[in-house]
Amino acid sequence: MTDLRDFYQEIILDHYRKPRNFSPLESATCQARGHNPLCGDRVEVYLHIDTGVVREISFQGAGCAISTASASLMTEAVKGMTLVEACALFDSFHDMMTGTGEASDPIDLGKLEALSGVRQIPIRVKCATLAWHTLKAALEESNNNTAASISTE
Ligand code: ZN
Image (cartoon, rainbow, N blue to C red; front, side):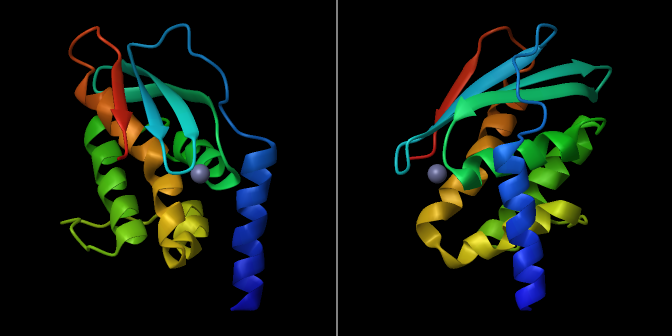
């Protein structure tokens, strides 16, 4: 188990030090801003959605290692997904972090499993889920042109 924990730790540190898709998105069709007051994490998620598919996704913000790594891993996972798949991934990830088991059709989380250990530290769960709630807010706002804003509290 120690080896797996080390491996997960490496993934988180790698994505914190070199966040993927870390830039604004000129062609964004929707975006949302999230804030986790418990830790001070801030994130903005940008999406370019075309014919029901997430063609591009990026994020910006400032936060702790867990919130940054989670956002980075999320952009890698969601890019190229349909909106239905992205929502299913949100549900599965949320289940993993909260242990509620609400996803009707859980899907393989792949590298996102690296964040599963955060569940042991309840105060950090919101760090890990911030980008995901922001993604969901952006998807829900995608039908109008106003930027969404969420706070996890
Ligand atoms: Zn945090």
